[in-house]
Image (cartoon, rainbow, N blue to C red; front, side, top):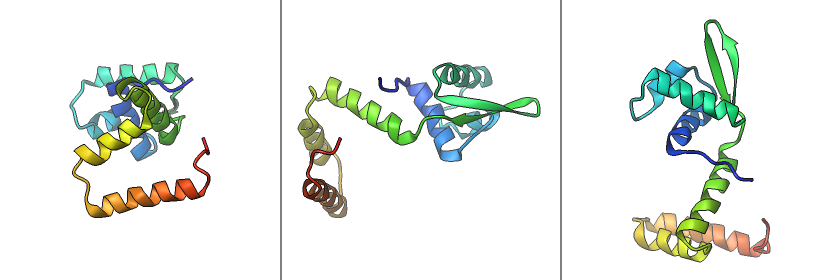
Amino acid sequence: MGLRLSERELDVMAVLWARGSGTVTEVREALSDPLAYTTVLTVLRTLEEKGFVGHEEEGKAHRYRPLVARERAGKSALSRMVAKLFDGSPELLLTQLVSDQHLSPADLRRLRRILDERLRAGGNSR
């Protein structure tokens, strides 16, 4: 089963992945959209109930840490996006990425290198 994160949960997880850990106040201050302290606390508690974060006591505060890797969440979100937005077709996703984004020639060369390496490795490692 994949990870299911709402936008708000993903925002909070991004802070924890970037920082390694954080109290409610630290997470709140690091968010780009200002949220109430109680909202951040509720999101962190929800993430903890889902098993995505854990906490330890730090004085009167709790210090939250991610229990799942960013890569695992990224794979889960990408799989859902390909299934729902691109009718299950990675080719449509790639086409959208390279045609609608303002990718530099260097970006395109890096993407080509990644694809070439995957093909040389057998292309079927999942």
